[in-house]
Structure formats: structure tokens, C-alpha cells
Length: 91
Image (cartoon, rainbow, N blue to C red):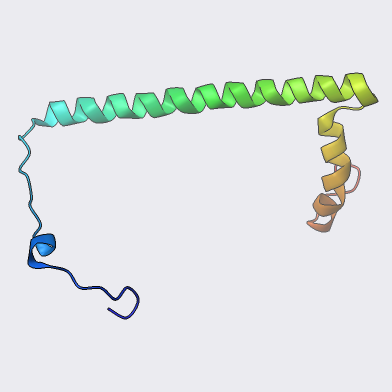
């Protein structure tokens, strides 16, 4: 090929497919339910951690400079919200 020029030997070109044991519908369904539950738990844990991190940053900013991190972000992004059509008193 032009993008990746190298030669493949006969041994490297062979693809061996291993047959997996067949599973019943309910086994597959159970595996997917467990996988989905793991993803949901991970997302919930990340959300709790993110909210706690923002609360910590807010407390540090409030204690050090007297204004919270969210208020600073509000002042920074208010002009962008106004440009997108949000009334200024709500931005």
C-alpha cells in the first residue's frame, strides 16, 4: 500500500478465528445488564466527584479572594451568553 509500504509474509497473513462457546439469550442479557450497571455506577461516582471538586474550588476561592469560582465563570461567560441571545440581566 502507498500509505504503509511493507510486505506481509504468508504466516502473518493468516487469520485464525477461535470459536466461542454459544451462550443462551438470558446469559447474554445478564452480561449486558451487569455491564450497563457498571457504567451507570461509574458515571454516578464521577458525577459525585465532579460536584465535590467544584464545591471545594468554590470554597477555596470564596475564602481566598471573597468570590466563588462559579461567579468568576459567570462574569467570564456572560458576554458569550449575551451574544447567543440570552438577555443581559439573565446572563
